[in-house]
Image (cartoon, rainbow, N blue to C red; front, side, top):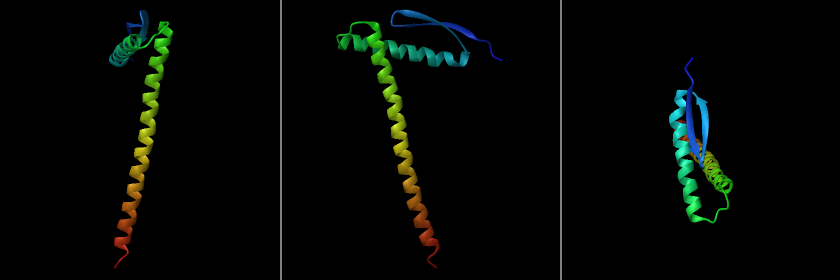
Length: 98
């Protein structure tokens, strides 16, 4: 069993102490950095009343990206499946023509 790692992440002027697996550290630090950058962008671009509004906007942006990737992947899978079916039909038609 691997040792747990204690880290502190700063998000929206708050520090969050976490106990994590060492394999999670890089991903969590990158995520926190991305949130910080996006929050600063929102604060500079929009009239925002408080940090909660900024964090809600960040959460919405990140969640929508994840959802859109899922939609895109589903569409790509359907397209690939349709192409494979067409190829299968073509191969079957060529094999049965003797």
